[in-house]
Length: 292
Image (cartoon, rainbow, N blue to C red; front, side):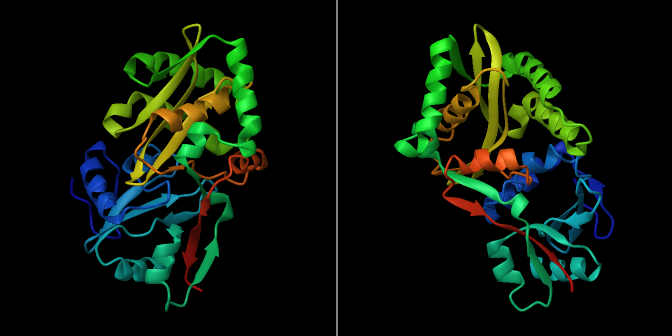
């Protein structure tokens, strides 16, 4: 589908997937947002729309606080596209280190680290095997779960859709935080990911207990070395289950990858502590860039 020239724009369409897949195959991004699924599934949550500046594709969006922004221009003359966007008073969000070094080294602008948006990068083999004393507590929790529940682990397929959606609904009723505007949008994106996993090129694992879905994790390839886990949910009341599904995602999927990107913590203290407890090998930095 044709993408209109800036400043006109249009919504995402499922038919844009081949274009974005080809762009990302060339760019080999490291930040978790930069896959077609990562953008398409959150097109409503962030009001994403597409525009084109020369040969660069521009994704324009909106934060949960209502702030308008653009993602880094994709392909083409990204430097010229950045100058136009910044000159129009927009800020760029989700800019990674390499992009900053290449395009903003000699540009007068304000570059701000977004710690709450840093991605957590792990060695896949470590998540899959939980070696040594550093992961002792994780292994203990998995053993606790396994000793108390007869369970099976499956690769996700359409036959698990209803069970996963039921779990998602139950999980949401327990976890929902009042006044958290992003919560419902994230739930909707998860449901759509499950329903369109094949079309999105996503893979997942499912854990059943006595035949009932009690956990799932879904992700995709981010680049040749890295998989990204976009969505993971586990029954709140089964201790050790979240550690189990985390391990099984890394053990069974994307085994040719060296790393797993488990996205950001959004500044939530509990989520931050949990992600740090798995000993990331790197926090993939993201920046906001704006004209001074």
